[in-house]
Figure 1 (cartoon, rainbow, N blue to C red):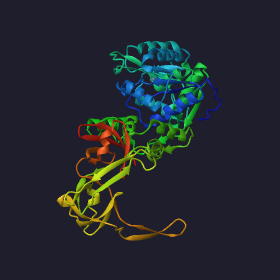
Figure 2 (figure 1 turned 90 degrees about the horizontal axis):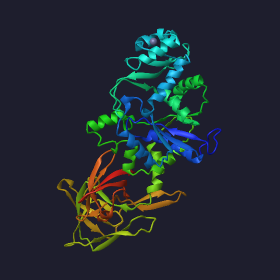
Figure 3 (figure 1 turned 120 degrees about the vertical axis):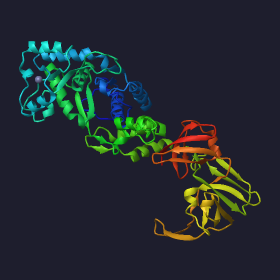
Length: 492
Ligand SMILES: [Zn+2]
């Protein structure tokens, strides 16, 4: 339960208000999930508000992408509004502030205005009469360069709070409106305050990085005599590698071919997490654990994986041999080997019938394992038998070994947890698959793309299945092709 001071069941109205400048990422998920949970827990309403009044920060495809991603996250909104459809509403409220004498219309050059502000002096427009300001407001509809500014206090210690802008005229075309005329766009503090008031938002949940915006919006509430909503500022969740969420860096990376798209395996967009097989409920649980505390925290991928593992750990186990290399074992007896699909669940088995030809059997092992071998080494083929290496020259593409019966290799001794001595066989375990009969596999991981062979039982896999490749990690089936399965790496 998220504790909201003075919240009444059935009366709570909250909003999630993204900017459609790109796809949602893990940072957005926090605000979306917390507001959604509050609406659900208090039997209230959630409004989805698309804040698209800055035409330079609008990406047309983001409108539907945001809704799709929110649906995937399990966020249910009761109403959706798009701010670019409400431009006259904001304009009307800006005009009312001018009529009240609480705002003015200014076309001072930015540098000049800034210098005056730092000197705690007013610009010439601030002292014009209401009539003159209303006349200038009319000009704003036809003339470039005008801005409506709210009157605050010239002595504000924080200069950004001094006469900040509310509305601006711009000829920039809005990608959604396709308007080719001078248009009055609200700045976010005007549109946010107006909408939060009109939509009767009871609780405004936002990060501490919005504290100054809250202060600005309070001026607007005060001038109109509106009741303030309950402002809640939670701590900032920083994301270590900014490149994984930065819209500009992602766009650049896609253009340069560094990323395959917004769902590239390297990214922390919701699309990428979905493609990797992260369960949306795991994201929700992670965000609920963080809650609305006001301490700053760093997003932890490990903590998210910890939550996610609960949803995927009961999946099937399989073998994947990365960079396969041949292993020929001589003097090999007939053998049928069974591996459980899961060690704790009774899902059944994968069976390998190992029938030697001329007493020899050909297997595949991973190149990284083969490179560690030298002549005379004894290794254990995972859950099967031991072999002794005869020829370990990996440059020939094949390792030759001898089957070893009843040998358990060198013993080592360790201290058990009650102080007792424990002995076990210290033999390196090596993954293997029969040579031939496997399926080509490609696994897109954040660090690399792994190519290799997965076991024949993987032929039953379907898109979106999640499995665990033993010693490798969990993977989501991305595409099943003719003789190739492509996976996205989920986690270890
Ligand atoms: Zn001015």
